[in-house]
Image 1 (cartoon, rainbow, N blue to C red):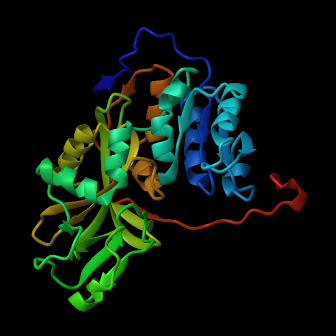
Image 2 (image 1 turned 135 degrees about the horizontal axis):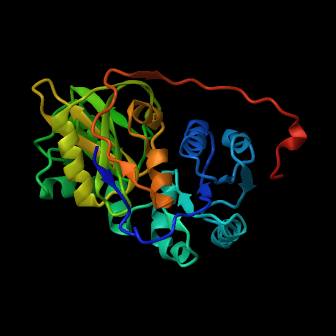
Image 3 (image 1 turned 180 degrees about the horizontal axis):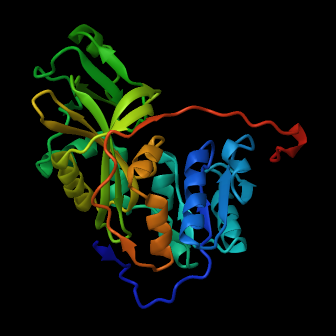
Length: 334
C-alpha cells in the first residue's frame, strides 16, 4: 500500500492536536467524525467549536464552545485569535462559504502563531466563489463545464437557469422559460446557465496541504433540499475521478472539498462548481473510504498515512435531524 508523509517529515510528532471549527452551527456529523478519528488514531486532542449563534446544535458535541461576534464585526478576529491561543489550537477549519475568503486572506496571521488554517489560497477561493470566474477557469483549462453567460445571447436555449454569480446552494436560483422572462432578470449580479438533463454528482475530494490528491469519491445526489444533499449513493467512475484530480491539482485545493458535476446520458461530464470545504453530505464520502478526519489528523501529527485508492461503491446515505433537550439557562450567549 502506498504511503505518504508530510514534506515536514523531520518535525517531531505533536503530542496533542487541538482543532477549532468555525461556524460550527449544526455540523454534528462532522464534529463526531473527528472525535472518532482521534479515538481510532489514538491521538490526543480537543475539539473546539465557535459560532455567533448560541443555539448551535454542535455546541453540545464539542469539548469547548465559544459564542463569538459575527464575521463582519471588527472584534471577530482578535476574539478568535485569543481563543486559539487559550486553547492551544493547532488546526483551524473554516466550514462556511463566507468564512473561506476571510481566513484565506488572514491565513498568515494564524500561521505566525503556529496555527494551520485548512483553506486554499486567495486566488483559488476567489475562483471557486465566483461562478463566472469558475466557468472561465474551466474553459481556459479545457475542462468540460456548464455553458454560462453573463448577458443575453442568441445561443441561449430555453428553459435555462439563472442564479446569483456569488450565490450558494439553491438560494436565488430561477428556472427561466423564455426570452421575455429572461429580459426581466437583473443580470448585474446573476449569471445564465444551460439547463442540464443528466445525473447530478458530488465528489468528495481530498488533498494534502501541498495540494497533492489523496482520494476522490463520487456520489449521486438522490435527494436535494435547499441545495444540500439529503440522500445519496457512491459510484465508482474513473473518468470522473481523474478529471477531479486534474481540476483539484490545477486549483491547488487542499483538505476536504466538494466538487459538483453532471453526467450526461452520453457519458460526458460537465463540471458545475467547487466548494473548497467540507460539504453537508461529506459523511457519505468519508464512510465509503475518503477518511478525511483521519488523514488530516495524521498529517498534523506528522504520521505516515495510507493513500486511498479504493472505496465502497453503492453505499447509500439518508440524512435526518435529531433533537436536543436541555434547560434554557444552559444556552449561553445572551
